[in-house]
View 1 (spheres, each protein chain N blue to C red):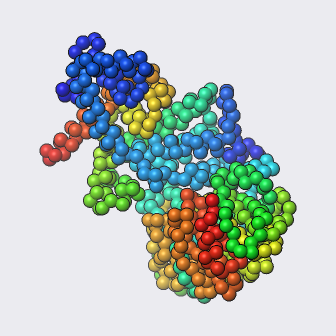
View 2: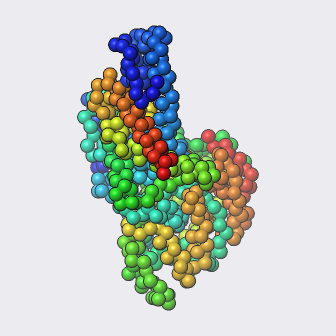
Length: 189
Length: 439
């Protein structure tokens, strides 16, 4: 058995440090999973995406010189894959009439049936509106709602840190505008 | 002021980006002071800021619907095991490889040939295979990478060993191929608990209280990673149905080739006695575990007495490495992770199995005893074993005692780890006290 084939002991080397892959996985899996989940809303699918992120990381570790770059790389790939999956599903729903089949989250499962339906519909509505935003705005909102700082968002998306506030403000405004537009139209029907 | 149409009164006024940055605490101290001074004197910006905060509150309240609940976040250790499994499938890593931090050596697992398969593994395989058949999210099994399932709870189910023709896994074996790749056992004396934990990848819990008569010397025996697959075969199933006079039953075509992979991350057996052998790094032959599992499997009761051939007597279980005093063991291992691939839904498979009129009553009872919503799997209890649900470490576990053999065990699952406390005592209160004292 080749020592290098053990993913636990495989070291991820950067210019400044060397760290076992397993340690990197355990530190960042919760964040990567959370980003994916916000996009797709299903445990299994989010876990699949998180696994794919780390498979890519394992196969081709990013050339990160500082820890923040590694974290940014993981967040970038997770957000891209998550948003792609979200948009793909949205297209299926829109063009093929695929029924939404998002299971009730475990937490929501403790609500009464009516509350469960409302929670599920609300989550689906939020994702639908998110999927309609310009792609970069989707990313700003997902990253910020997951708790990333402006500096981290800047690193993930490649914009200047000083621009994040304005870009985020625009994304939030657009999200809210579309939300009200949609809910007003629904009420009118 | 309409939030959607912000108005700027003059060059000193704050734009929306600055207000959002102020809200998020992202301004420098100087910028913040400047912004706050302006807000205090500018009614337009002040109104705009209030409007922005109201709007933000609404936006982030909506976005909160996207958050996973803590219960929906997979256990990181299990997720890592799943990744190992995935890499193994892709040929990038042989399955279940792991590094021994104790000796900095890599140990590979052995391919389990039927003749060498340990009863311990048959027992685990039986439980896991049962879980396999009962994978949740059956409707989601139509794509390539489909579902992960891990055992979360145990439900004691009284069974009669006679109600199984050839053991619990009998019927499943008739439907396809079960391939178990079991790991070695390695008795290693780790003077340092942290070293062992590093080896395992999770925190070990040790008892603060041992049952009376149990020695305080301790030895750790490593259970190496293992994996297995079950692949449904339509041809094999048809042959079995024909042989058993059920040839008129149709086999759902989508089941053919459906494969379910199980991965078991490394675990540990902690053995207590008056003294323990110093057989550091020696690979124990499989029989050593048979004796340990003799105590547990008597309780777990695979019902497969013919294949197991383990007495489970107290004297036998001392051969693991420690001797003297009342034999006492703790097993800690991550929940098996099960991944389903293929075109068929698990519900199809389960429905098919349950539709067979000649399915043995024991297998039928177990298959019907699974709670897909909670990850609960049946724990078969043979007649001589008393079993009851108990509360320990904030979860529901199962306590099993066999007064004829003076054996007992408590088993539960918490935080993705299955724990079992077992010993040569049928005093349930003492066992439960030890189980509760794990810390």
